Structure formats: C-alpha cells, structure tokens
Length: 289
Image (tube, rainbow, N blue to C red; front, side, top):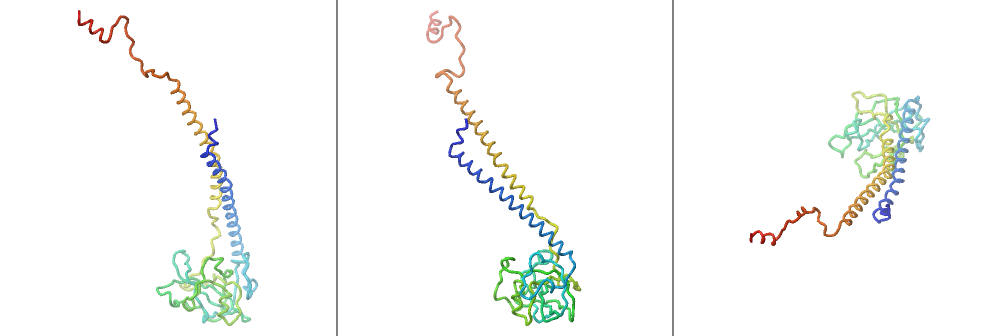
C-alpha cells in the first residue's frame, strides 16, 4: 500500500524534508537569540541614559577601551575646545537617517593636560567634498559639555572602511588612538557624543539618542521558522495520503477495465423479435410476393 515510499522520488523528498526540519528550528533559535540580545541592549541603553552624569575621567583614560556595558553612560567634561585640531567625519547621516553629511569632531582640552574627543553634531556636506566644510564655530573659553560616552569606532565593528588619501582634516572613523597621533596631548579613550549645551540655531545638529524602544521583528521571525519546521511533516503526510489515494483510484480503474469481456459492446443493440427476418433473405422474400 505504501511501497511507493521506497521509490527514488519519495526517498529524496523525505530526506530533504528531514534535513529542513533541524535547519528551520536552528534558524528560529538564531532569531530568538537576536531578539534576546536586542532586549538586553535596549535595557542597557535605557539604564545608562537614566544614570547620573559622572566626570568623563571616571570612565576613560588615555589608551583605555570603553567597555560595552559603559557605553551611552552620561558624562561631563570641562575644558577648552581646541578648534585648531578640529576634523569632520565623512559619510554620516542626520537625524532623518537620509541626509548625508559630516560629524564635527573637536578635541576638548581638560584640566591636567589631557584631551577628550567631542562629537559636536551633524552638518550638511555641501557641494564640494574636497574642501573642509563651513563648520559652526565652537564656543570660546571654558565650557562644560554633557554627553554620552562612546567606544572608539573601528572598521571591524562599524563596517566603515578607513579610506586613505582624504582631504585635509577629514576622517572616516572616530578613533581616539588615530586622533592622538595628530594632537600634542594624551587623548582619553573613546569619545563624547554631545547632548548639552544645545546650539543656537540647531547647528551642528546634535546626534539623537539611540532607539531603545523598538525590539525589531526577530521574535516574529523565530515563530515563523518554527511554524515552517512544523509544516514540513504535516505537508509530507498530506502528500503521502494524496499519492496513496491517486494510486488506489488508478488501480481500481485498471481492474475495472480488465474485468470487461473482450469484444463485448459497450451498448448492446435492440434484440430481434421472434420470427422476424432480416438481411438479404427477408428483402428477397418481400420482393417475390
């Protein structure tokens, strides 16, 4: 009854189905882990943004890598901007996530002879990308900056290629080690993403805080993969039952055809009446009367 399952076609179909089930289950768990990571990331960002601001020197030092669990912590820094060593960071998007321009990166000279990099915000790229853009002037004199501490950018983490041969005072990555080679003072690891004070006229445009409310579609994708995995055996059973039914119907039709008597007409003719003559003999008899 089910011997057709041993055919080449059905053996291949069954093996493919058996291989797909664990793959789909694993993909579901992969999406679940991404969901859990996103939830944990959102909680970390929310907690760090809500924490009391601390001096940047409590979380960073020259040559120190800002650990992930300290990112987005609110920090303060007091000093004087070193606009002579100000640079812009290319290919950065505005808050609308569409407009392309620059981040303005200005060293802030702290008490004690150390610098910290401050991302003062976003400006439009303008028409000539080969020249240093018209950057809104940094505040003069001593100033206290509040912002979020961020880890140094790298190509491995950001996916941004550190292109060489850029125009003067333009960079691709915000990296304290690379900027330290241009500055006369030691530079704290990481940088500050400025949130206050705000700029008059909104220029540069302050970088908005990261989204920590959306959890993304990962959980929905996980459920979909698991439903696909459950659908494979169900679909296999439906196909087997349909194949068995079609084969049974075909076998019954063949048996019906074989049971018919050879030469038997499909529709029998009208029987002759007793004594009735047909054919040439009958016509001859009528004609001689």
